[in-house]
Length: 109
Image (cartoon, rainbow, N blue to C red; front, side, top):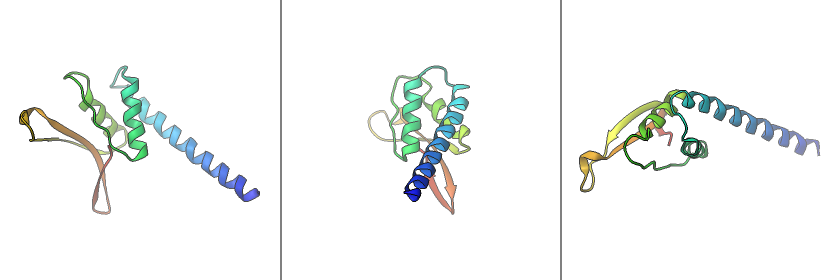
């Protein structure tokens, strides 16, 4: 019984650390991105879940700014890579934030 309680407390502590980390990142992103709470939360959820997300929209919605801000807030490397596929080859770009660990590059989103 005591072991289960300890495991539960440890799990709750870890959840609290994640919540605090998310709040720290949100504070940094909100310094740059005004509004757009839903997309900011969706991107962070995908990041913390280790998944991917595709952000689409008309120009001027701060899609690249959001990802670069996430990268800065988490001290990740950001780069924008042009994607040359389809009929509008020059108009599509891919943005990524990531980090390197043990010589391996990891993508954040």
